[in-house]
Length: 109
Image (cartoon, helix red, strand yellow):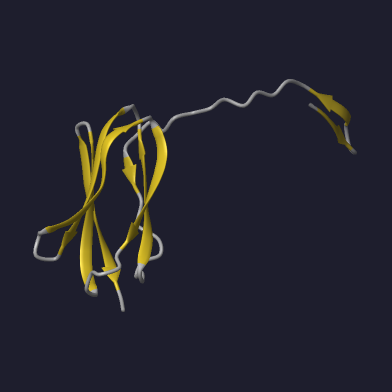
């Protein structure tokens, strides 16, 4: 790159962009929350592997499996369309290898 700095003249140098994969397992809060009728669940995984994303109701019953398969390392986002589900509190559990995290979300009507 070449840039100009009015106080010091011309600045030159090399720049590279490295593609980085996340160094850790992370599950973000769904957005929007509360939601009606759909929401996005995003997470990052540090390495390629089998990922399971399940939705549970407040009674602990599995409502839906959004993902059960291999995913590459990196950031991912899944959409849950809750049409046909009643309003209330739900939980989503993301499992990837030895990692697991459960988060709470609310469906409003």
